[in-house]
Image (cartoon, rainbow, N blue to C red; front, side):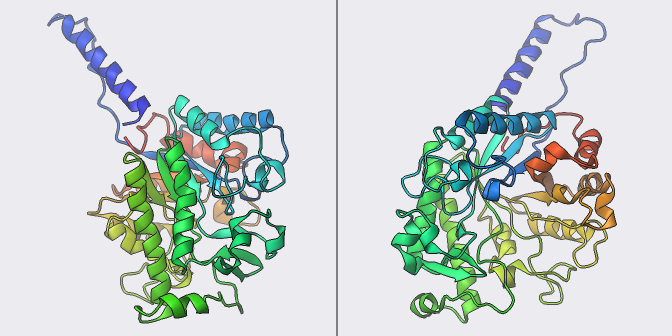
Length: 412
């Protein structure tokens, strides 16, 4: 249990004792304390890559950065949320003093420059002080949103090990097929778990990169060296990601047993036209295109929770939220993996999106639908900037319709 839930239990116990001490002649109208609510994920992603949510721009003073961060945490509390998924390793860098990787350029504007404070340490402390869980969110393999190794700080691991790097789609990635890369990225991420009482480790949907038409992810040498035990390259790539997931999970539990491990993959595992076990969708497939066998991770209990990014509206032809949510509920049924739904708050009110996303009630309907599926234990909203802006009131509608009463934190 987190500190807030323990305090709630203590207060409830105290109230019970006080009531009992009054004997049988309790005051007229006395009511027993309500039973505690079930744990529910009410989360928000706080993205730092490209300064998406925070800091608002690079180069702010340490005091200004801290003030913006605290404002996001306060907004989460005001919105009835209980969990913040804070992106602390956006591009093979760090938002804490790491011996493995440089300080993130999104803080100061210069990769490797000390920002004058510890964002992750502060986020954990300030989140817990507000009764929020803090999940440290990492991107395992992305190095840079450009293709020039020379632009990285001189001491960057990718410059010291250029053989670890694959250039693809105009960006730089670590090669998931190299065991030394897998060990390194785990060490880099788990340094934060050793240093801070984070409530969970969270990975996003970028494993092998999203396909770029006409381009090939060049891992020939790694496949020739390490792929002999697999029937084909696709199976080997999935095996590499499976190893990352299983090893990371085991190492988290060894370092900080109370910390959980969660992943937010692309929302479609496979289409049913490809695999009868798949969903009634016609979309990109995480299994085939990102080499992420997300269904297996859930069914084999390799992770503590999964947040599929169900970023489509109800009735969307290629990927209908109303069909995907029950599919994921069925996958999670009978497992120890908790299921939360990833929600596309960023689409609400965006004029570039379909008519469905102009309706402030669209997201609220998602939460209403989820109540018919007990396997869905909560929702996570992308992302913090959109919780604050809420241009058409979609988040306000969710709060009014569903978050009128507080919920226990998801790890409770």
